[in-house]
Image (cartoon, rainbow, N blue to C red; front, top):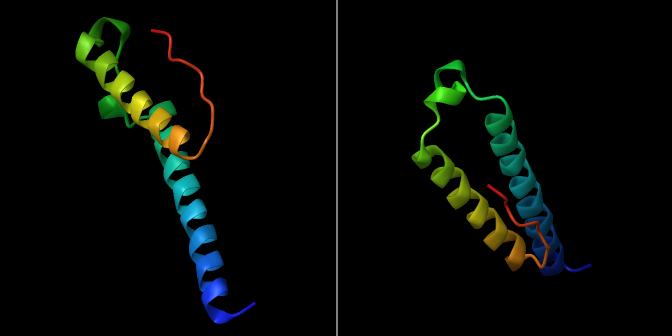
Length: 75
């Protein structure tokens, strides 16, 4: 494999690794937020749900770019 093709392949796989690492970081933070960000059910307001919906839509856009089908968020 020539140098240019190897650089392209290295960049491709590095980008995939960075995407996965970032998604894992986000997933962990959503699943286990710092204590200051945890909310009791009575503290959840409409804006909190809106933020989650917006984040989910951005994830779906990313999935569409990569040709991945995702489920519709039901809230």
